[in-house]
Image (tube, rainbow, N blue to C red; front, side, top):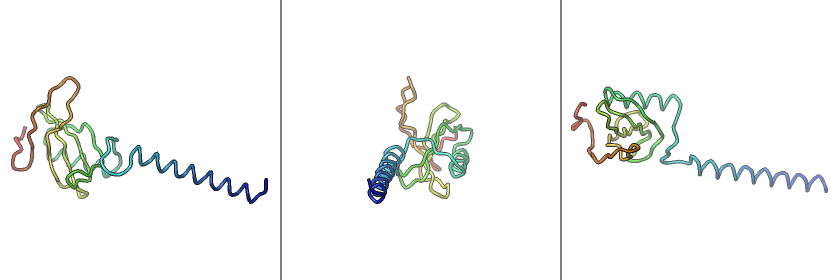
Length: 123
């Protein structure tokens, strides 16, 4: 086999591997809403901002988000045991605070209440 042919085959193999890697990356964590736990200084700032909006709460999870124009979604358990999704923009400002729609194992969460600056019960 000639050197030129080996180089072409090696180049095509590398291209195939790179294309496969991009496909896997998009399938696993590609843009938009993700259930993967986000990490880093931006997420740490989002968690802190969410806890300021839900005093006494505890962060359960944080992820990148794009719903309602948000950049981050932080799930916070309130002192009363209920959970809310705090959506924040890129500057860590409140976009929305919604009752968490996911049911914890064995629990029934039918509250559907929205919590915000004007209707926060302060629990």
